[in-house]
Image 1 (cartoon, helix red, strand yellow):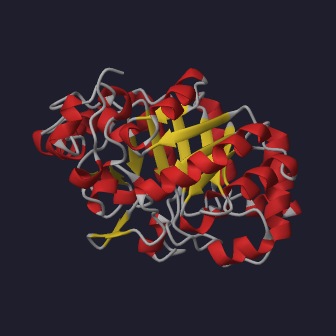
Image 2 (cartoon, rainbow, N blue to C red; image 1 turned 45 degrees about the vertical axis):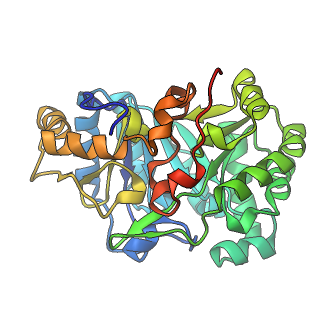
Image 3 (tube, rainbow, N blue to C red; image 1 turned 180 degrees about the vertical axis):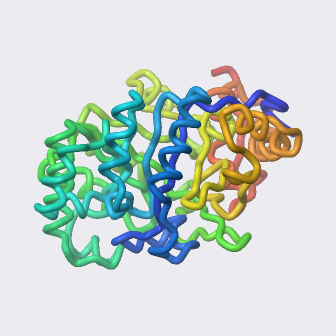
Length: 350
């Protein structure tokens, strides 16, 4: 059963996955399924062709991601091309490479439009335990440079490693790295070789409890706080959701459910989600070659069926919930490891 059956797919933003190589080793990362392979790197030619095509489709914003996209050698030339065609783009990075003086000096001559820094830790011990990197000084320097140059904020993927350290990493981001805002996402399962990997995914109610506990302290650190609410609203206290809504601190409903975003992998394959990189729905040069054939592919019955499957109600109880349209049932991948019938409770009269 689907909440948005047979809707037209016409994306307004996209992720361009330019490589799989990374200088971090996050246990929850989708790039681990590609074994962080340095050979899986998009050519500049293909990146330009795909970007021009996406612009013709109507994409208004592009997210440049990896792997770690600062390790992608054509990055600066690609940024110049995006500038020339008037397309805003955001680089999604751990910022460690920004800490290297030689690279930073070259980078700021042709930077991305915006930066999205994914912050993994708030101290050296936490960094090593989380991503197996000891250069905390370099990471701090890189994050601070990004924050100061772009007047930007950090994103934090809340996972089992951070269950008792969220306030510390938020404080570090503001006080040491000069973050202007904090966006908190929740770790989701990643599919590798047709199997969901969820070793860092927190049990939903433990996650809720931890966020409720830490929220008052985090709010003291920054008023520019938001949550990418991939956990259904019915899991949370009513007053908490109402407060987040009143303060405009919620981003909700997965882009797959809204059918607004697409992902292009390093080999030109098209996916519905970064975490589903093993599940290609088409490939550049084979299944689509230009804007028209891309839109045709996205709206073929078989592809539309994939979207229907991913956007179906997690539970029939969701049909009874007055908040479902705002919530979308949470991240669809969540239900690959948790039984929605044990969790979903319809909310009435909100």
